[in-house]
Image (cartoon, rainbow, N blue to C red):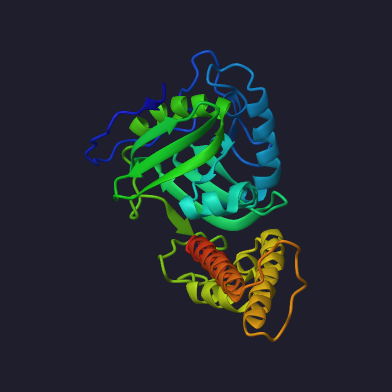
Amino acid sequence: MPKVCKFLNWNFERFAVPAPDIAIHSNQKVAISSSWGVPLREDVSFTNAHGANGGSLNNRAKWALKHLQVPLGKVLEPDEVVLFLTPGQKMADAPERYMLGVGYRVLTRAWLILTNRRLLHLSLRWNGQWNRNLRSARWGDVKEFQITGRFRGKLLLKYHGGSCETYWHIPKQAMAKLRILLDTLLPAGRGETSAAKGMASFCPQCLAGLTPGVYECPNCRLKFKDDRGALLHGLMVPGGGYFYIGLNLMGITHAFVDVSMLLSAIVSVLALMGKVHPPAIRGAPQAKWVFAVSALVFSAALVTRIWLSIRVARKAVRTFIPTS
């Protein structure tokens, strides 16, 4: 049975935030180490929900620390320690899930990093390196959570600002660990909130807060890719929406298919007009209506694919992707 957390109706007085040595597992002694380049609770990061050897959780945590050591070292605040790391990307909407499939999920990997003060969401490139996208939410911003799923988990977070989001494809072992941590951190962290009262984006260069729809950092003036660029690339270049946000492998694949569909639509129109005569296929009807239907199908499919690439690109740039 999936576990649904309690609805938390906190009043926001100033309570102490979770300490770096907050108790998580009664059978483990608190062990804060900097041997991984960042302050880390080894008694939590490398153990399972029961405080025992984490097995695959241990291996995943070490992989993430190896690849995310630099950005974590930059963004962690004083008295902030890493408690747990797990794969968990933001759940795509229905068009992306059903039309792009597994490829989209593989090429938009991300990690959730739980610290004693907040939840960090770091997106990755195809090679596992950080793509300079930084989002976080204070534990006091979280109103409630829900964890579901039998083999691959989903984490639903609802924020006091009214927004909500779902992270999915969380490993089974990590789901049980998340329950333990969130049940501990949310009540302890209710006194520290942010102005956003939810998940917010930050500049990867100076860590200043970013305003939705404003694609330039107000502090260091770092520029980010924008909606207009996503639209123009999607319209003018086959697979351009994916190229614009750095999903180059997906862009190449879609460019090949889009060009093929465009050429097929053009040939169908020319055949309908009698300008070309495609080779006859035995048993296939050669009436003009066949070419008309073919042209409509290829054109509709092409328009849908262009619309989807623009949609994906515009949603991605709204999480703030630096131009350089």
